Image (cartoon, rainbow, N blue to C red; front, side):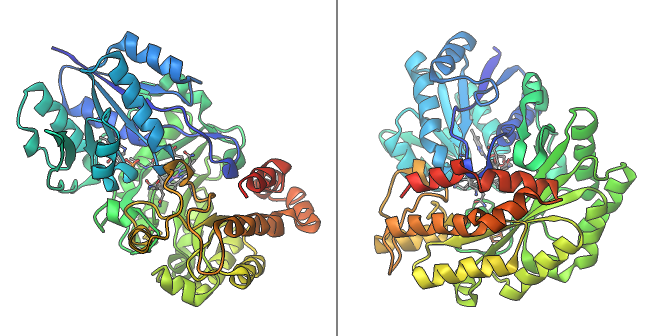
Length: 474
Ligand code: B12
Ligand code: SF4
């Protein structure tokens, strides 16, 4: 019998700070491709509610008409309830539909989530591909679910957490993400602030990170390891996105794009494929890695890397130490200088709201941001994402004042600090944006900048909508 599997990207809110965007559901496409490659007798569909402008009524209709055996969905912490709602919708239509969720949030909250959401049957923890395939096979053969590593589920009212699954050794063995399953939506994927009207597609260059930042979910999720696809494979995938799928802007999902031999080889591979500024691309990197490798930064710039998001976090050495960042304030200064020198758009992430923060320390951060002078600064509030050290410490000490995961978007204050209430942290966030983007001189300089990206970012971030939304959160 053919098994019908429906992957659902739920209706969800945009992250208003990044403006108008519509990303492809990359994680689901990676999973769909693997299931398609590994299993016979499966029919797979992807419902991307964002791209197809579907609301919850449409999700219901779609599930009812497709009549899947299994519904799989994914979401960040801030979208966790929407994933549960997908599962609930499926169960309301037919209680026999098997519902599966995964990703960072559910991997770290498996017991809590399975206890709170009876409509979720299975949580796949960590890397999803092999676990999902084995789960489907086991369900089809009515085999022993206890033997599927990486899965958590309910049994007789108790949550069972099977042992973790080993990671895939060679990421090059993975198929290309199943963009063909969302072909009808390809022309809709965009990220206005980053890429204007160009088609925006995403690809994975590596998984995980070997650093141990206290606020980060990623090193735990990928078991403390960093695995990369080979430069040849990354270049092949980028070429596929450009030539076969019409990508005009590419986002590499790497949590930490480390410079090293890999980056030199990638530059060479991309040069051979004719990459240049006509297909710009983006990744996230560490300031210390940039500071140590200016020559490699320049090489990747030549093949179209025009934008980097760097984890600056704070201008105080003590705060960086508390975050276990392992990079210095000087690294941040150097990184921004090197990026600017190479005409690479420098987007610096900054964090406020840690335990020791008070008005004076956040003012100091604002001043530091101005001194650092990246093209764009994104200020966020320290958020206790489940799975992080920050979460463990905050939970243990009773610091978490808001349990609504819908607010875990790095813009809502979830915790007070020793000196500031949540409302004060929220006010401070607005002050950061006002000072960096909102002063008349800054805003004018940004809006009339000769750098197109900076112009677009300032037009958005200095605008009334962002500041107004931040004001409403207070
Ligand atoms: C691209 C990206 C974005 C894009 C949009 C992506 C999208 N499709 O919606 C943008 C820029 C818009 C974005 C926004 C945000 N993002 Co973001 N984003 C990413 C990034 C860099 C890549 C995601 C990706 O495609 N990964 C590749 C896929 C293959 O990996 P994956 O999703 O983890 O899936 C694998 C497994 O986790 C598992 N799995 C996942 N889901 C499921 C489901 C099932 C059924 C199964 C079986 C398995 C499974 O299997 C997959 C294959 O092994 C990740 C970091 C990262 N490297 O993953 C952060 C990340 C997901 N974002 C994060 C956050 C916090 C946000 C924001 C809240 C704020 C911010 N600062 O960016 C907003 C929220 C937006 C919103 N309201 O929805 C966090 C999530 C943490 C958490 N616990 O919630 C991450 C992990 C970054 C981090 N370092 O902490 N993001
Ligand atoms: S914040 Fe970046 S450098 Fe730190 S552990 Fe996470 S991915 Fe690695």
